[in-house]
Length: 409
Image (tube, rainbow, N blue to C red; front, side, top):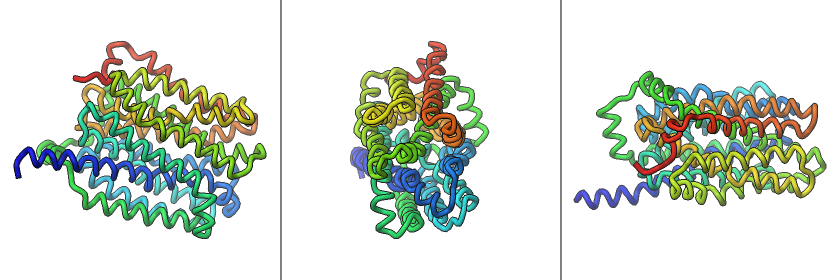
């Protein structure tokens, strides 16, 4: 086989890898995750959960992200994302299905913790996979595609879980059993897929120790700013998505309309994820795109604290339109930070995931608790998390901003 033929086959195969990565986000991460908020009414009635307990359950899925973010990235850097993703999918399948056996708050919380441990291994290694297979000129696009996969799953889960899957399968427990089987299938596909030749050679010839990887990424100031900003947006969106269906139903909205409003958030996000990522590739300035996206998310979320009627729908669209585009651009910017690249992409993304884990755990229960002082306060609190990330970007010295402009080197 000639070198040209091998390169052509590798170039074609990377698109299959990208499709597998995107659908892993869809079927293993996003659909199961976003099915929970719209099934919380059914779950809380079955298990006698309070609103605050629902907030903790929603947040518990992110607790392990704090730890996994610090170890999962270096694991992917050391053993490769293919093996790491295969094992993570298998664990999600087993632990995720076990949630359907819960008989109360304690057991559901424990199984959410275990599921979260495996689930948080996936995003950092999906984005590392994009960094390995795609050159810098296509990296934003690749991360945009996998983000669309995530948004498609969020949209499908929010629309179908409570109104189609649960009635069809006989309740929320059986829904979680089916999701577990699908995750196991994806784990098998990843296990038998092909490793990127460059990454396999690099790992064999140049081992990266945990201490070296974490020590290296933690010294990068611009990476920390990106972590803070990403964590603020993630905590905001996580709190909003878990609370919004219950909030709208409490205001007298029909369950189908409440679920449709949540779905509109994901639909808008899915439609604009790739255009935003491609735009950041074209203009070569990730920072400007990120700040603009955060402004829209923060303003839209804050407006929900005051809006009523049709304005709620418009605020949800404003908050949702840049959500996945922001995540795609943020992960691209993280890989492009000077000193990161594909070699330390897993560790850098893992650090961001760890920060997101802290925010995702604390934001939902704190916001839900604030609801007793005023139903609009949770949205204002979550919006403030986003604006803290904007402030972090603006305070970064100019010399450090150049590390994530996205300019071609």
